[in-house]
Amino acid sequence: MSSRIKRSPHDFVFKEELGNGSYSRVYKAVDRSDPQRVYAVKVCSKRHIIHENKVKYVTIEKNTLNLLARANHPGIVKLHSTFHDEENLYFVLDFAAGGELLSLLNRVGKFTEPCARHFIAQLIDTTEFIHSQGVIHRDLKPENVLLHRDGRLMVTDFGTATNITKENTEGGASFVGTAEYVSPELLLYNQCQFASDVWALGCMLYQFIEGVPPFRGENELHTFEKIVALEYPWANNNKGGVVSLVRRILTLDPSQRPSLTSIKQDKWFEQVDWRNREALWKGIWQ
Ligand code: ADE
Image 1: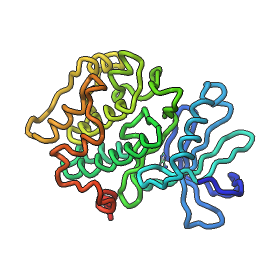
Image 2: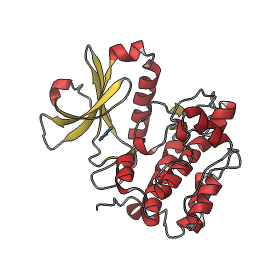
Image 3: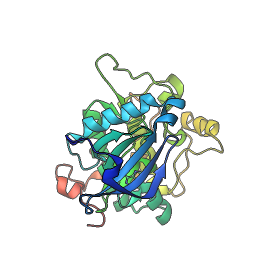
Image 4: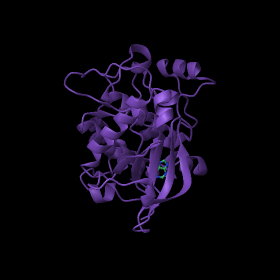
C-alpha cells in the first residue's frame, strides 16, 4: 500500500535490470534506510508513455494494483508505493527472487503433473480473487507470473487489465494481450470477459504439461487461425485426467467454458483441498 510519506529515487540503491517492456524497465532496488528491504522498481519513462499513447495503461496498472494490494492476497505482486520525478514514474513492487515462471519452465522443459497441479491451483485461486474485485487481467501468461523467494507464484503486469464496472459489464475490447493466450471471443467478437482469463489459464496448464503453448503458428495470424479452429496437438496422449481438464477449459464458446468454481471441482484436482490455504500457498522451495 502507498506509504504516507512520498518516497523518491534517492531512497533506493538501484541494482541490476530485471526486465523491460516497451515503455518501462524493472530494476532490483534496495531501500537505503533498510538494506534488508529489497524491491523491484518499475521505471516508466514519461516521454515514452506520452509519445506511445500509454498513459491509459499506466493509470490502469496503478489503480488496479492499488485496489488489489489492499487485500494482501499471496498471489499478487504488491505495490508498495509510487512516485515520480521529472523524467519517470516509479512503481515500487514486491521483488520476486525466482524471476519469471516462463524461465523456470524453459529451464526444466515441462512440469511434472503434481507440480503443474500445485502451480495452476495457485493461479486459479489468484484469478478467482482478481475476478472477485471486478478485474479481468487480460494478459495471463507465464511471463507475467513471477516466483517469490519461497517458490509461490505471484501474478504481475496489470497494465492491460480492465475493471468491470456497472456501466461496463460486457467489456468490449480491442486486442490486448499476447497472441498465444488470446481468447477466441476476443478474436471473433472483440469481447473480453472473465472467461477469457479462464481460457488463458487453460493454455498455461497445457504449457506446463507439454512445455509449449497449445496454439503457436509461424506468425500471429497463423496462431489466431489455430485458436479459432481449436487446433492443438497433444504430444503424448497418456495423461488422462489433465488432458480432459484442458479440453474442458479450452471451449470456444465462453458461455460454455467452465467457471473457476467448476474447474476446482474437476477430478484432476481431487487431492487439492481448496480451503486449506496454507497447503495451497506452500512454495515449492519451502
Ligand atoms: N521482473 C519483472 N517484475 C519483477 C519483480 N517484481 N520481481 C522480480 N523480477 C521481476
